[in-house]
Image 1 (cartoon, one colour):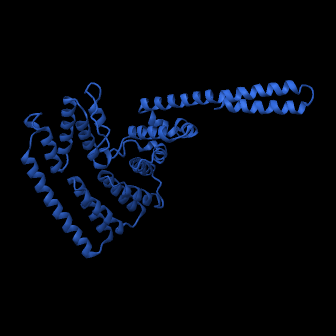
Image 2 (cartoon, rainbow, N blue to C red):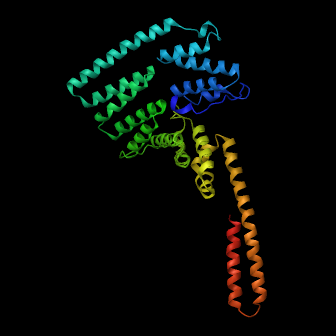
Image 3 (cartoon, helix red, strand yellow):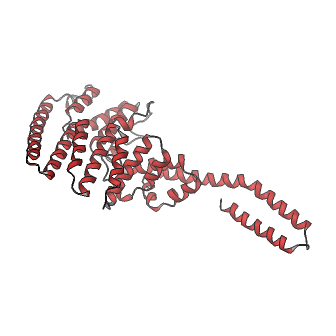
Length: 341
């Protein structure tokens, strides 16, 4: 998936014993599952893990209609898994023939809808054609079909569906400007109250900010994502990713107060963090060390003030009780401020 995974450069040491690729892949569906499995195969130094990832990717590809991706995966395997994972020309021919028939049928139906000026049917026709091209791996054609439904949307529900489709394809294409634009368009649509839809939009916006290295904005989107997202966006991301992306972006960009209020004390985001204990502990340990360091740095200043107060009180003993009380009051306030750092 071009826009997501092309940032890594060096292979990572990993073995099947260290990384459960099957459990990881089970968090995702569709194109992103295949893309992530290919990424694992590309960036691991373990032959067994490489083969396991490619095997699972090919099994997933067989469930769809993307014959180009099937050929690429078979070529990468290069016969290392035996004949069962070789080039199945019969399967390819069957899928290609069925796809050609379906495309022709969808285009004829769409032309009929256009002739009869049936607005809702035209919208559905473009949507079906977009789904077809998406399943075939032709993302540019899918993008164009989904965008064309915009002129035929008559309800808020139609607009949201169009935006989510365009966002999905744009993420895979790596066109994050389109992602941001259509997230904004969806956010401006009236009567958008479905918590799952709102969570998807937060995630998509977070990914767009992350891609443009706007880590603070990305963190805010991820930590505000509703936990009701669950596995409903598995064709893009998983709840574990929300915890990881949000937690690490927050560590990189939030100040101490924001880290406490927006992450540690955020009951909703805490649910995400429970899915990734390593990130949760990292955040808590980091925050604890910030607090400790802050108190250590502030201590000399409060010690000097304490010493100055004692000197003034000794010099002014029984001369000006108001001054004494005033200094004691200031000292008490500052000490409390220090203890709250």
